Image (cartoon, rainbow, N blue to C red):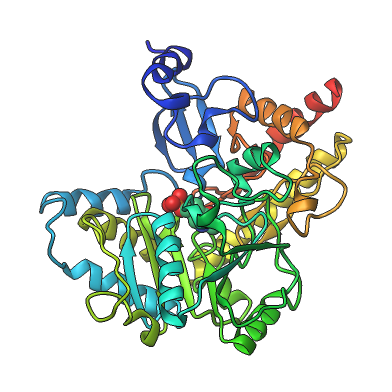
Length: 428
Ligand SMILES: *Cc1c(COP(=O)(O)O)cnc(C)c1O
């Protein structure tokens, strides 16, 4: 039998850090990553046969549980007809219609292959539409790994920020200062004063890459008003929140209409997908209709659209009621377990998203989010993993309870957490 250690050793010889995305490497929590062999519903099994109740759920790409039979069957059926054509297909139309039905601000939608591609393209579109160059982003919001948006990005980039210059720009080696010269990074939950050089403000309407930070009352409204005042576009990055916290995403929850919206994760049903959408007059500036160029060999891919449509098919109003109840139960159970053990922690919940912050007070921005005790997170992470529950191996990620996390599964996770929290408290 292969072990995780053997595979990790081999992986490190042929893959930088042994992983294809940094947070998976366990750098911030220490130890050897488990290599997944298979997954079903709320569970994953590693190559050694260890079973974990999984709260990672592909960082939010999975919402119906792993290997959901309806999604797998949709992919299987689609694959039999070919995997990519370079010509339009019916399912692309169906998926765009489905998105438009759920998210009324998206008159038109274009599919891409990742969330990063969606945010990069939206910047170009916003600049093309306004003839302006500056973009405003919020510290601790992650918008993928494009040059212009990587500064102070939370998630696994948090560890690079610490090592870079005090202002945090540009956040990664290899990003020329020219690439971020027009990026302004401002604190989350404060409405910045804009001027008429700003093409767009991009925001995670619920921040889920610096732990979980809800928008303060009036923040999103204030952004909408300030953008309108100076003619800047408001872009919601709903790559995590879209189709996850509500049928219509965060913009439905908070009743704010952005000009453009980015999607990813849930909308691919576990395959490689991103999308962006918005008002017709903006979207029609894209090639072939307009002067803003964007293209993709695998955009609107037959397997990805099949999986995405099947995933959205699981998400009716009842599903969101269920998701919200699950997240609330997980959050209150975890909070109780941690508090009873005497650990200082707050467990925020927004819709179906749950955070975990080892500090006294709910974080409201990147500075307060970074108050989290990363060492305690690492200890709790390992205590949970040893007992069969997989959290993300990074203190700035959130938990993704889904439709497969039944009340029994949540109960079991909370039991494990009680035990894990006591073990951590005993050693600190
Ligand atoms: C994950 C994420 C992205 C990037 O999506 P990828 O598919 O990983 O490129 C962008 N924005 C937010 C808010 C995300 O969480």
